[in-house]
Image (tube, rainbow, N blue to C red; front, side, top):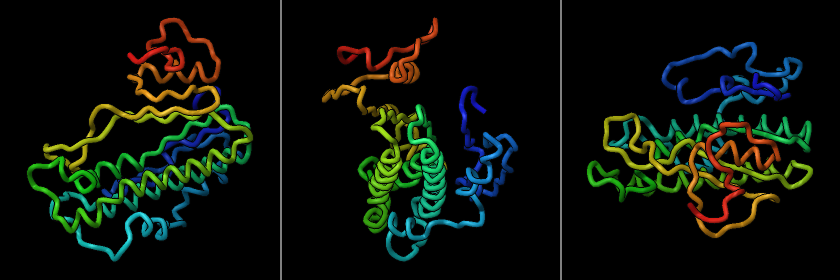
Length: 246
């Protein structure tokens, strides 16, 4: 477990898209800390509970359709796996926060939106593709999925943040952006730059302009939010210390 963390639920637990490819991994003994809370913290990831069909239907209404001709993998199946792992992760996050609504730090890794962007990019942004364009009927049916998924995550994060005793500072980062790809790949949406860096809260002054950041700026920003000292040699600059756009 991470040093200094009182509760840890590893991303080794739960199901994701790799299982749809026949990969099955067993949960390690130390995937959850403390062990006395293991049963409660692992409950949201139980295989006894299947996909949330109501959620899947909200994100992609209508009868099940065949895999689009332009897709290597079925985006509808990707949606099921993405919604499943993110829902379970947010469920256990609520369990943790209910135990202590004054928790100083809660870090969550949501894997599902990455898969959604990979699988649905050509339908949300068909203009990005000059060759092998998706069929108009597929665009009409699948184009709204990315936007619906963002609204779903926004609502779930809002529900989670409402559990805090006082309004928290919130930082959302991605390890990459997304865009079109023409290389041979399982998906037509692929890794692009820039990524995402969103921050708001009581300690975060509002700025109408965009701030250029790098991976190295994430940790210094978190340290400033928690009013912790920066160790010697730390790379990057806290966004809170910037007076102007770089």
